[in-house]
Image (cartoon, rainbow, N blue to C red; front, side, top):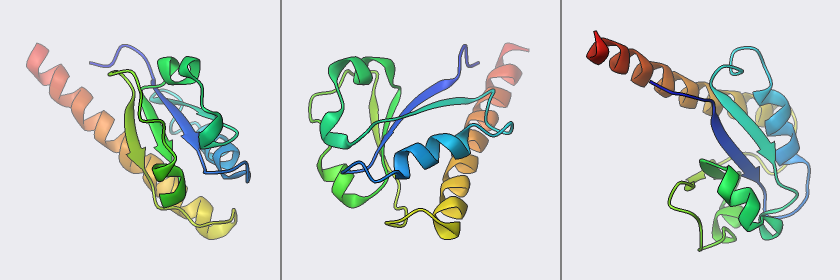
Length: 118
């Protein structure tokens, strides 16, 4: 069973507003019990303190994935989402789908854990 919300640190290669938009979308009621999202200004600006907080470091595109810090705590796993290069309707739809998939997986694991405890 999950003891706290999963912490996602989200970054694009540069400060283009996409990470902030992911955080805005993740603030929806449907996700609030499962994830906490913080946007990083840019992948190159991610600090050791940021990585220590995060469970997942989410790159929003291939360039951000290539720029991910190689040194991360064992508790911070990399994740790569292929999102559009600009915010807009397509970006929002794909981001929401990625968030729903992540939270759906967490819900399934929580049910399995609950059944195991029974």
